Structures are given as C-alpha cells and as structure tokens.
Length: 242
Image (cartoon, rainbow, N blue to C red; front, side):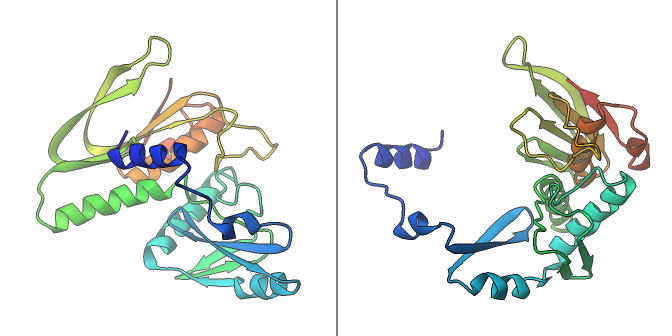
C-alpha cells in the first residue's frame, strides 16, 4: 500500500476525513450528466426542476479530442465486427450514438458510454509511440496488466494462480501486446450477448500486435468462451482462458 493511502486511511479512522456537504445532497432532485474522456467519467450535477431538459439538450453533441475520437472509432469498428456484442454503452443504447471526426453525437437521452474496456489499451499504445518518438529503441509499458513490448526487449509474463495462490510463469512477450481481464458476476463488461448472455467467469488473456485490440478482445472472448473466435484472426490475435 502506498504511504499516501495509509495516511488517508488513518485520517478516516480518526474522523478527520468527512464527505463534502455537496456529495450528500445528490438525490432525485439533482440531474447528473457524465462526459466520457478515455474511460474517465467527468460528472456534472445541477439542481432544479427544468435543468434536466436543458442539460440533456446541451449534451446531444459533444466535442471530443483526437484521442477520444480514435478510441470511439475503434469501439465502433469492433461493435460492427462482432455483430453488436462489443458494446461501450453497456446496453443503454448501442445504436444511438455515432462519432464524426471529433464530434460525438448522442441520439438518445438514455445513452451512456463506458470506454473502460478499450481505452487503457489505447493509452498503452500511445505511451509506446511517445517512447519511440523520444528515441527509445526498445522497452515496454505495463498498465495494470495491459502490456506492450517493442524493439529488442523480451518481457517474461506471469499469471495469477487461482488454485495454488501466487503467480505462475506463462510466456515471454516480444514485439507485441498482451492483456488479461477477469470476469465474474460483479464485472461490468462491454461484452453483452444479443440474447442477454453474460461473460464466462474466468481470466481471459489475449495477445495482439497492438494493446488496444488485445484489451478489447478479452471482453469478446469472455462472452464467446471461444479461443478460436474468428475475430482473433482478423486482428492477428491469440486468446487463452484460465
């Protein structure tokens, strides 16, 4: 545990950390909207009887930066390629949004976007690109289990051993990306079956040339349970269930 986290917990135990007053006033009288920015939701709350209509209208079209637009385009591509199984709206309206360049159009009030199942992989790819542009010939980026290795580097990979505890050696990654996601009944997933089916309860790992696709494909393989899913070949990827 980080020292800052320990201090924060200690303050909470001594009663020094209190919930800000504005946090306690969120109720049915408040309207809240969230803006997606690479998987982080920036929430705006406003109070008043007529504010819901005003805010809803104001968020019909959202200007996003180029990085967010790139993630949205990839999400739309994978949604189409998977016949709708990959859904960043988490069922709130998969056909009710579109992104034209850097303008995100919300076509229904109920639509909410969650890019958490794809944005981290994109961020890893961008970090690798930045390292290369800065003159780094080889190396790797590891963002919480989403990994990409480039150049002459080779990185040993280990996986959590659910049966024996600890970790176990798995493979060595070179010039590519690797992502692992865990799914259980508490997981909110971008993969939802057309018939309402849920992902398998397992760890899913995917190797691919780019981390964006490795990250996103774990959600689809969790849904199909098929490590030979045709989508893997489309993105030159390989999958494992464990």
